[in-house]
Every structure is written in C-alpha cells, then in structure tokens.
Length: 180
View 1 (cartoon, rainbow, N blue to C red):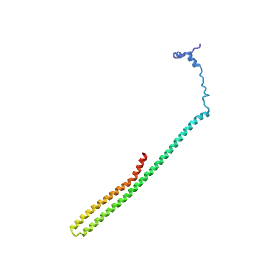
View 2: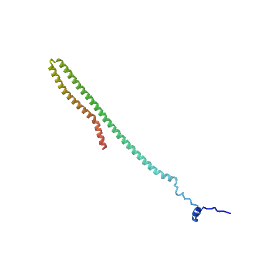
View 3: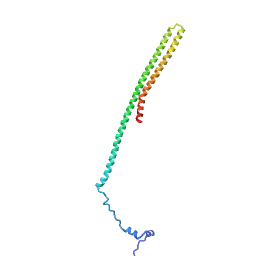
View 4: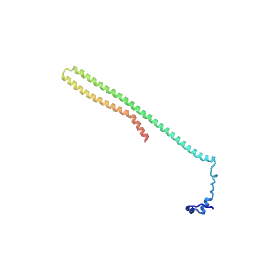
C-alpha cells in the first residue's frame, strides 16, 4: 500500500491547484546574454568617467599648488618687510640710546666741572658772605642747567621712541591697509 505523505493542516490550507502549478513549473532563467556588455564596452564605460575624475583632481591639485605658492610668496614678502621694520626699529633704538647716553654723560660732566669750579672758588673765598654768595650763585646756575639738561634729555628720549616705533607703525599701517 502506498501511503501518501500527510500534509499538515497549514500546508493543506495553503495548497491550491494554482500554487501547485507555480511550484511545479520550472522557472525560466533570464536571458542575460543581451545584458552582459562586452569587455571593450565595459572598459569604455569605466575609462571615460575615470579620465574625467582624474582631470578634475589634477586641475584641483594644480589650483591648490598655485594658490599655495602665491600664499607662500605673500607670507615671505610680509615676513621680510616685518624683519626690515624690526631692524630699522632696533637700529633707531640703538642710535637713540647712544645719543641719550652721550648727552647724559655730557650733562654729568658739565655738572661735575661746575662742582669743581665751586670748590675752587670756595677755597679762594675770603669771607663767609663771599662763600654764601658763591653757594647761592652755584645753586641758581645748577638749577637752571639741570632744567635745561632734563628738557634736552626728555626731547631726545621722545624723539628716540618716535623713531623706534615709526618703522613698526608704518609696517602695521601697511598691513592693515592691505587687509582692508
């Protein structure tokens, strides 16, 4: 006796003659021969976009190199100008310091000579009244001399500071004018 396999209740419920026909009918393989390109067509399809992308990348890199060189040149020129400004500033500061020291030394020498002249005059004074007159005259002259010396030193210091700052100020003004 041949027994038929027993189907489960779910399989019997789903099983229909149409479904049996679809399951038992072999599916046709799709015909891919028309859709598979030849090797040369495939290469051509890949090469053209690749060449375009390569050209785009090359152009972008060349543009980047040109822009980088321009930026480097601009930075180099700016650095050289800043270095020049600092050199001029340091030179002005050095010259100003030398001039200030020379003027201060000359003032100290003049004051020392005036003090030595007072000592000589004091030794030759015959009375206390002459001594007091010499001292008063010396004090007045020294006060006037010190006022003039301080004024000269202050003017020299101001001029030195202005000459020291001028190259840097010019460079900064030029930089801000370029940036604006």
